[in-house]
Image 1 (spheres, helix red, strand yellow):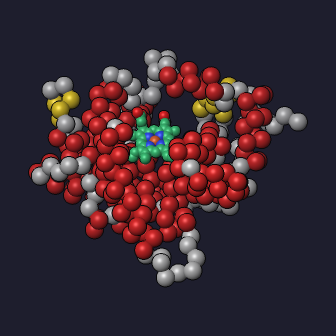
Image 2 (image 1 turned 90 degrees about the horizontal axis):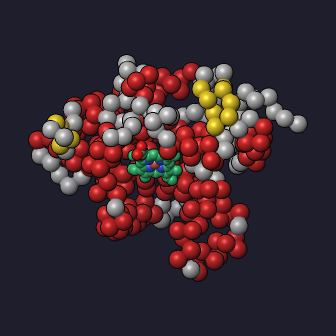
Image 3 (image 1 turned 120 degrees about the vertical axis):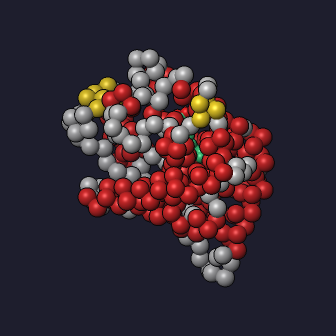
Length: 286
Ligand code: HEM
């Protein structure tokens, strides 16, 4: 049976099968369709998605052109086209080279150690609450340069985003909660962190953005704040989900868990496969 083209995709509550069946149906029967509910086009096949994501001259990413009044577009890498996109991405690229990430490894190990030390007296660990929620938040905060004492605002922003549940996907309080938390995060960055780094740059990404030169100008506060918000949001819940999905998937496949434990060279491939098999944001495709 063919689903109605505009029927909303199911959530991920069953761990995937219902959503994957929905997507297969969409790929086979409505590979390109206009979704009345969101007033947008949906593209489900790999080749088509690849074309849309690559061909920016036809499928522009520049939200300023259609939503000039939207406050989160200026300086937001994910809503702009070349050449501005390339220029802005270049400012932070050096923070994400293989070398820079390898240098980060000891700091990541230290954070993991601290998180595990905090649960050492307990007989049970909640991997999501005690580890995978906290680890990426603290790693990204270190890379960006949010001091330890200021990270409460990052937790509150993440909690507001996580407040949406499968049981109540249209919860009106959700949007209000996210807007409030985002406002607090933007105020913190714009009124405290960015001015502090402009005055006294450190070895972190906020300082790089605050002091960067783009052609013959600097980024203004709104651009630095929006870019920083993107990095904080893009890096936290995605990686949190990946870590949880890794645990879930390997626990469902104990033979492969044993193989990966015995041969750590298999870890990168296992991560890639879990990203493909159980992506952090599968619902976004709907
Ligand atoms: C498993 C973890 C992650 C997943 C699944 C993921 C997924 C994605 C996806 C699908 C996009 C494209 C969005 C679009 O085109 O609209 C994206 C973009 C982006 N992500 Fe991630 N991400 C992850 C981790 C991270 C981390 C750790 C960071 C850095 C702190 C990060 C920073 C970004 C940035 C800056 C962009 C915009 C890139 C550009 O437009 O050039 N992401 N991510």
